[in-house]
Image 1: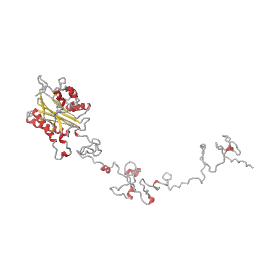
Image 2: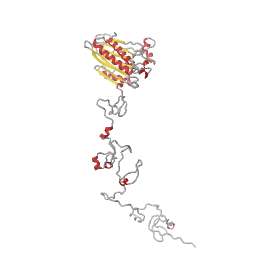
Image 3: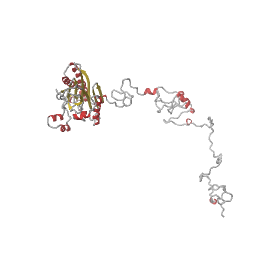
Image 4: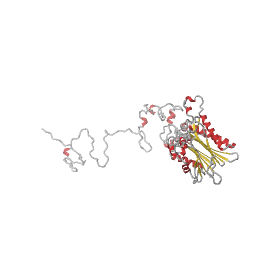
Amino acid sequence: MSQSHQQPALSKCPGCEEPLDAGDLFCGACGYDLSAVPARPGDRPTMAITVPPAGPAAPAAPAAEAVRWPAAAETDSSDVPAPVHRPTDLPGTDSGGRPLTGPEHGQEPVPEPIGGPGPASAAGPVSGAESSAVPVRHDDRATQEGAEHAGDFALAAPDPRTAEHAAAAPAAPAAGAKVCVACRSGRVDPDGYCENCGHAQPRERDHMEQELGSVAAVSDRGLRHHRNEDSFAVSSTSLPDGSPAVVAIVCDGVSSASRPDEASAAAASAANESLLESLPRGTHPQQAMHEAIVAASEAVNALAQEPAGAMEHDAHRHQNAPACTLVGAIMAGELLIVGWVGDSRVYWVPEDRTQPTARLTEDDSWAAQMVAAGLMNEAEAYADERAHAITGWLGADAYELEPHTAAFKPDRPGLVVVCTDGLWNYAESAEEMAAAVPADAQQHPLRGAQVLVGHALDGGGHDNVTVALVPFAVRPQGAGSACETV
């Protein structure tokens, strides 16, 4: 005998939740077939079908299903219950795996220094009472006074802005000590490096300038060399009759030799000192120039004399003695004296640029020898890769010292350009050099020398660049040659 299925009584439509009357087979609002309503499952799944419209709050859940939160122990000033559980109340471990301490363990927490566990500081261990009185500060706001009123904390490690931390920083350079060109605060050690940032300092000789009355000189390392192997000396003195004498010496170290920078410095200094000693005594300027070149040669030769035991560090040093070239000019009275050994040069640039210019020296070089022997013309000789191989220099391994000197008596004002090949490589002919010299160089020799060095750097700066400018002023004279060789 079959049993009839008894439809469960529903108070609301399962589709639209409209109220139903007893015995309804279909919902009067949405037409839901109430005969197809399945029996209520025993586990009462909570699957929402539609979002109920806004209305009065749903009735509270039965007491058996309500969550029972523990009552707060106290309230704050706004009657909001204060939280019962605090992070410090919960057990756990720190980043080092040690158990966290708290008041419930009967021990005051000790703030750990920033940076993790480590040996005690020089100030000694911190007691529990002291540590609890100084909580760790995690912000960068101000002072202890503000901490009492604004909720700030003291730092657990030294504030880098305080005097204590500053004491650990590198000490400021003492008065007169060299200061780093990079950080402007560190002291430069004897090796040329900043003790604060480690920056290598430029060498003193990388760029040198000097202006002395009417003579000026500039020397620069250039763009390709790692150091400046040129040197110069400019000075002035008086002749026995009281008239002035101006001296300019320029030396170029031979890069293939050892210590070329020392050789050029020694030669320039020795030649200058010799001239300052001989000219006031009345020595003829041309003879004084010859003696100065000999003195410079002796100074460079002395560099090759090594102390005992030095050869064991460089067994071939005696085969590669320090060496350099030298060129100089003396303006004394109405005479212009030039002297040289090597391939550095002297140019004459008249104040009136319509007048002819001239090169006053002849190179001690392979190219010059080929031209003098008639084997090549000048263009062919200087195009050869051997052109700049010098045949005369100052040094212990020089074949024979042959100082060249010449005396000129200009009949018009002009400018004497004394330079190394680092400049004349970019203005080789006298006309090219005159074109590179600024128009006001005779009135402003230092600025003119700076412009000429810049000309070489703009051309590539393949070598060290050194130039000295000596303005030559003469009294108006009658017609005559621009220069007279003695």
